[in-house]
Length: 471
Image 1 (cartoon, one colour):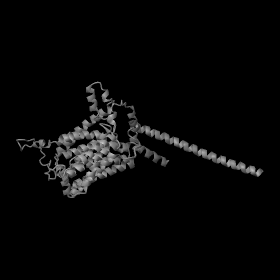
Image 2 (tube, rainbow, N blue to C red; image 1 turned 90 degrees about the horizontal axis):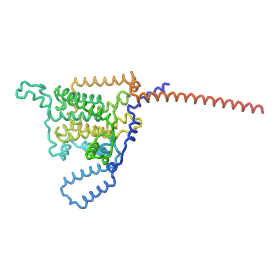
Image 3 (cartoon, helix red, strand yellow; image 1 turned 60 degrees about the vertical axis):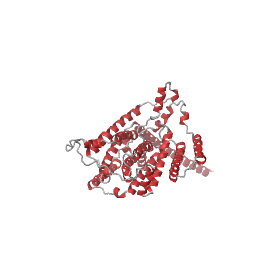
Image 4 (cartoon, rainbow, N blue to C red; image 1 turned 90 degrees about the vertical axis):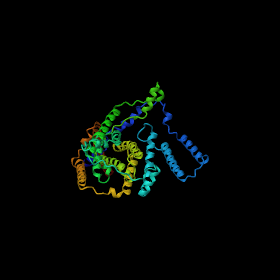
């Protein structure tokens, strides 16, 4: 019986919060009239022929250039495009189908190129790395005057009669709409309100923690908790949850563009191509098992490190905050994060999924490499010790986290009750109970059969001996 309880506990930990069988079967109900067949093909041979003609033109027809710097940049660019061309046409599809599977294959291949570039940058010195990025923009590679958002924290400064609200207007820069729209999109990829609030508040705490390292983290209290956490992040999360509710209840009935009776219908069908093909709700349930609890903590850590790397990279590589590279990286991370979290959720939730997702693997590798670049290029800044009160705060938080983990999963051990909240978990628990009763009955029946066979053998041997003795 103790072994059976362990097996039951292990199986309950493997119970899923989402019915993946239903998720996979619902694609069979979607009708496709075939009008998008050409659009969905990979066209591998066509791409190969066009690519070969381009190389023939460059090698045999085009007039060669004697500019070494131009040839090197052009060659590296062509090398990257060649890799992207192969990846878009040959790599497996990702978890999403809209706007096109090739788009998500492109995101995966771009993330590989980005990781390769980061690895190359990691092997350079700090000064050489700053010179390298000047090939992207000659205006880069210059020391940055860091802007501090702390200083005078009066919302209404009566000592400045010309503009008493200057502190408030000074904080109303381009990062305000970036915060709002950023958290709206993050909510769409995380799909859990508690996840979003934990990450949002934890990042504000990290800014408090690390403001002795980067002046950019030094902000007024109302800028931290009112402008950022409550207004920008909070409204973004609220709008994101409303959008999630709409996408969750929306019917997904697709019809080919060429079957639309009007031009307006065709235009609408083209626009709908950039909306989800279907929708999967995320029920992370971090306390349903110890593995999911540790996985949730790891997701938080990777998410927060990716946010921090934005500030540390621009600090050590001298990239201005308003430069297009920063916004490009953030948008790129949103696309990578959407596919990564979808793969990560399925890896945790689907018992049949035994392989960690490709995009999730890449985004973790990218985050770690970015952090190592920041540490290598400016170890002096990142190794500044924490203030005493901050160190005490994080030590207390760590011990509370460890204590809760021990109490939840080794003392209270109420995982079964947690899982039975959902109908799916109840169904699995009942099925597990029925299977165990059936296995016990089979074991009893098998033992009875063995006992009967043994007795029959003994009787047969006894009869044989008695017959031999009679002869």
